[in-house]
Length: 249
Length: 310
Image (cartoon, rainbow over all chains, first blue to last red; front, side, top):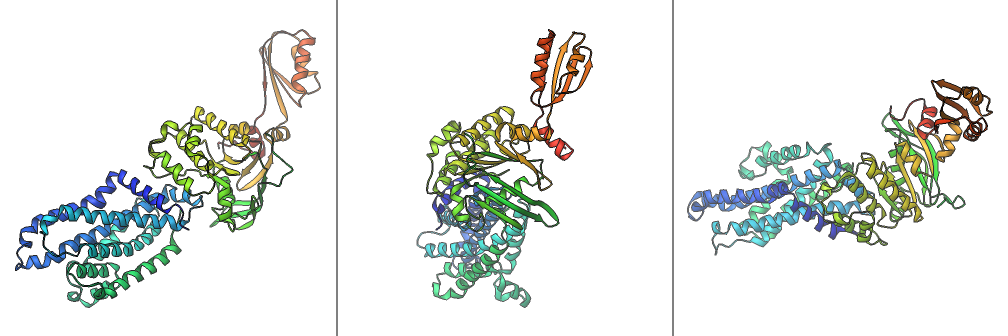
């Protein structure tokens, strides 16, 4: 049904890697951020009694993970707007390709890049999390992919609303970074004022942060069924809205 | 190869209308494209050429009217029609860093019946560019790649929208040869252009569109004969009676003299023969002899009252 999906996805990954700026933004910067923060706070992380250690062992990976997810969404918004503006989407539409294939392709590309970024981060950042520390890496990666997949659907709405490729990345950044103070990344949602808490309950990022921190701390998946459900609902809702407002040209 | 006028038309457009908000882009447009011909929709920029073509391709839905392409409704039966047509869009792009062979390879996976991609690239003169990124191709190379993509599925009908716009004359002539070879393989070509020379040299039949309406359609020669029957012969001679002799010829309307240069205007196919016969009969020695034929450009001027470049 989705003819050409495999070929187009592989092709888009190759094309993405040929663009140095995209690679720097999506992979290198999150990894660098992790390494710089890890080096800064690293020594204190090993002292289990330190308050910083308790905070950072949960905070840093989740912080970087959210950053990776946001980079993926911003990159999607930029690519979709550029593809629309330069007529690439229109040209593909004039073939038997299923339009869904094109969208699924870009989601897959972003998920692959997200996984690669996590992998690079783990390999390069090993020394800040010494061997023996029990880190649920696989589960954490799955949680990040699920979160990214859900937030990507908001990217399609942003990409549909912006008319020109030039304004897509700034608007996307504005929308996504505005979510950060409300999503429990810096302060626990419980400690926020009631109005702010109300805002945070409608933001997909809140559930992503909750899921990511829980899984990182070793919680079982069953403890986060509400977060997973929320992320799936966000995906379904946003995909539905996006399919209504999406513009091919 | 001459168009087969007995078979049913490949494209039949009946009274379509398309508006964008308050703007009427296409109004009451009807025409048909016959099998095996190169049909051109010609007119200035903004006349409604691309809108009409994109309706026929199934990319836009007309507000009114019927379209039939190879027996299908392009909107309703789009899935069944897509494999039978090849499309080149005006101002389309590909991913900047996609390689030429990758684009052809991707397109080939989208269709059941496909040509050999490498041979196609050879035929289009892109053999050396197989590994090149799209962004590094010249304008002519990009258009040749788009032709390759439009031909990869061996379509019965090929759409070419403003194919040579922005190309230098040399590249343009090369592309014309390619388009002729498509027709000579038995495929039908439906193109748009605002270049009258291109239409005249390439098209078997043309429809002139202006302000969203078809003004007239016929073969280029037929349109010239119908709307611009005047012919002009320029003769330079020192012969004293020349002007008087020319004026007596049956097909001649006017003769003007500028020093030794005579401009003979008349109508009909006999004019040139009559002038030559007259020169020979009266032993008139000439130093220059030139005929001027009206072109589609003149037809456009006559039909619309302005030049296509205005």
